[in-house]
Length: 510
Image 1 (cartoon, one colour):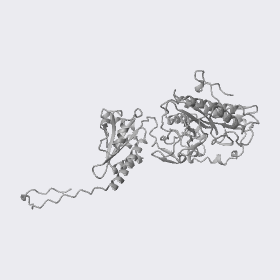
Image 2 (image 1 turned 135 degrees about the vertical axis):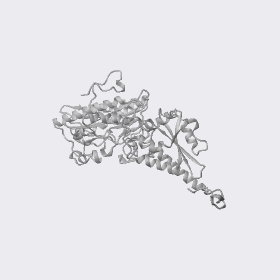
Image 3 (image 1 turned 180 degrees about the vertical axis):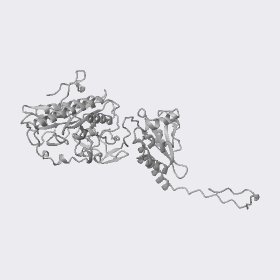
Image 4 (image 1 turned 30 degrees about the vertical axis):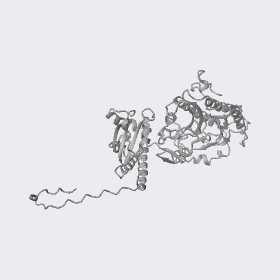
């Protein structure tokens, strides 16, 4: 700051010529301006992604701002205006604020600079990017969502680069556990923004919440991979080469955990409906599992980030629960595995979402179920493992569908996966005969179109190569002296599958 000059000789000042006005800064060249625009777009996008990574931002932070102005997200937008440096600083502060005890505290620096503007006044027609914002304002948005408009002022003093982000609300009890991000590289890497990929169908990955914790009461059932993601005991076990024969005591443990798995899957089935996220299904499964003192086996197995696999539409298997709401007309497979008393219990089923599932998708689900039932029918002492694939493939072909060949059934017991491997396609070369005491899964994945699949960038989600739906059912089986016992059989209380509706639940298999 400079002191004011005295305005008269009486003040003892001598007159002097006023200093020349400072020259305005030179205008950036077109190339410089374009580079600055790109930087502004990146800064705005990064800030928007930081905000979107916290699904309770809308109900906890945005809602009070709208209410204070007598507005709602349906008729107004959140607007942030400032220089590129401001956007970069806010993104860093809000993302890295590890000392914040609440989401309100985390985003306090941002909230102080946000304004609420009527949608009719957004955007300013002079803004660069106004068309994108205008389209977002006019487009239908999920109920309760809010529109965040970021307007970045460039150094020329005239240009404003605008972009926007639709913020979806998710007011779950534990939604503040950490930023929800996109999974990459088998769960070993994470990103704020979605990955690029040649998607085969309409489904896209959503944001994934941080890994859930397991209470101390589950400690006796916590596996060796719970911390580092590496199932070392499983990998080094002799059971990888030779299927174990369960003793009567071990068979009793297998029955107990299989029944628990069935009860958990039934709880997940009851939660399936339009509007529910697969994240919510993961919460249901996790809480039901740990309430029984068990451990959800998928959690951190080879770095898998969630407690259950949820595979929607074209996903063949190993879908990661995320923030995408299920839609009326979807199909979803829920694959549950629990660890109890040192034994694993594994099963899955495919459910319809709502009342608008296409007829062919319903037939696909029924075909996958029947493929499993026909495979179980051939099981017993002396049966060849390779014959399972012939039976499954024959029925799938009669239905006009194809069997995925990448994934197979497996031995299970003291470990998640071990010998034998049981392919579901015809002409396979699986070795061995079924013997009393063998415990394994059969879990055919039936595709509406091609049998081929592709892997998403998350390293887990397998999808059909043509983007058409896939369905799967799985049971855990024990070979007995006289036949086969379906350890994960449906209970009289199990919610009915679509073809059973109106007739009550299916009887328990024997």
